[in-house]
Length: 102
Image (cartoon, rainbow, N blue to C red; front, side):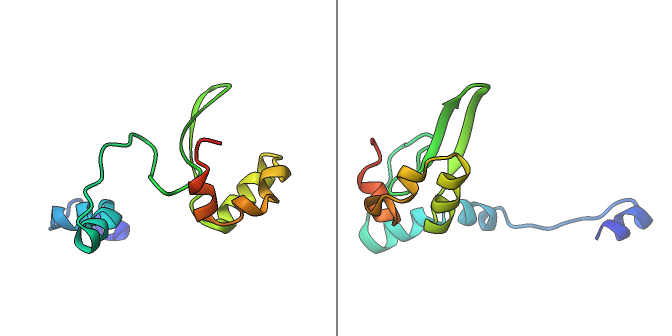
């Protein structure tokens, strides 16, 4: 596509906006369709996903989303928190979600 744009200079792209929104709302649709659950505002936190939030740091803030178990393991290794990485209660997302305030 980039080569086409460089040769021709312009291109019309027809995209349905609902497709982009469905991608952003993927879990919301399943929650509502399956359980009738309407999620409330949560800011930068994803309910049931841990860690997932905006966290303060030395230079300001950092957004961390370690939603997969393997990502969580690598994240804890990268930040030097072997104690959290190796805690059996935090090995799976459901265990981390149950202790989000920890």
